[in-house]
Image 1: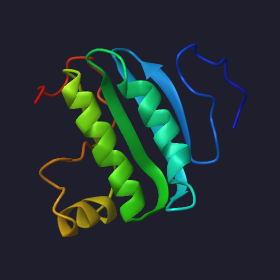
Image 2: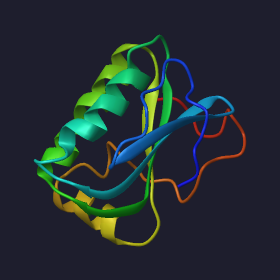
Image 3: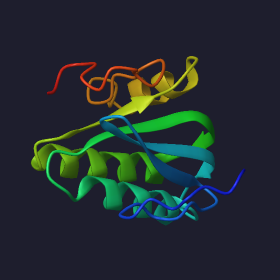
Image 4: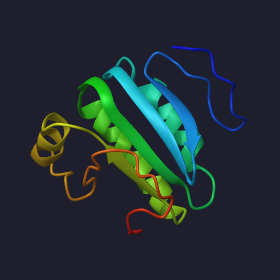
Length: 127
């Protein structure tokens, strides 16, 4: 990773996540493994980006290697927080692995995955 300027209001990158602004979105890039031992590293980023009014958050899971139920719990809490504040939280992933996990856990309807980061800040409808 190359050093990046720290954006005020966004937490510093850690071993599981980093956050950045991309147009109208805040993108939380998740990588490595998110499990009971590392869930708080992801939670730190998701809490920071969902506490303001009308957050529009994309959680990029394309570099994620492993996600267990504790990671799903963190995503659910963050999505509920974003929705309570008039915003949204969506997942970005490639391949069948994450959608299969979401389907098995009954969360596919709550988190219909996007194939990539939308270029248009207004892409996708608000729920």
